[in-house]
Image (cartoon, rainbow, N blue to C red; front, side):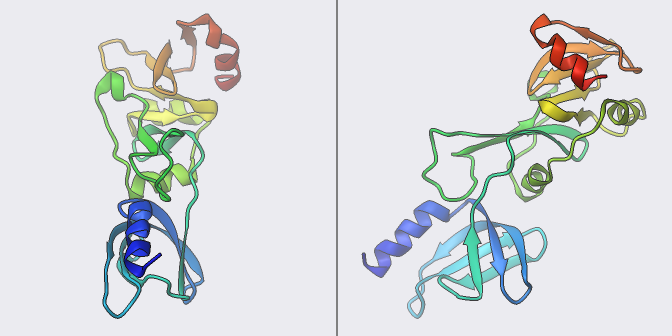
Length: 203
């Protein structure tokens, strides 16, 4: 394989995707977006990266001071800022080496209810890797204070403020509304098949 072919293959697999960059000098890893894989006459190639921690980074392809690695965050529901969000892999489209819209799905759990969206990006992926969730009591306290719009619970459940005049909160499994609960956590389940799981999460 020629250098041009190797660079084209690297570009196809990594460009416009999110990966982990390990920096030997800083002895740390940071999540980066591979913005551009650039041809360079004097080097194998140049990578232009973006990091939430360090801003714009440029490294030489093949440098021993840096290495790229790839891993997915845990699939499921997690807290991202003021919203419960969810991450899923798309198994049928895995040719990209890094995380991208072709092989991953990330959005809020209430997208279909309120239209609130979140894009796949450095901040949202960082939240997906942290995978923060709350207990029922913590979630209700936060919601009742109107500090957030929705809150992630364990086991891929979440609670959201109601988008209508109904004061009861929405109870969701992934992005499906399966019931309601009042400000004290009393639950009305619409789908009995979720009753046992809801009782466990909301106890």
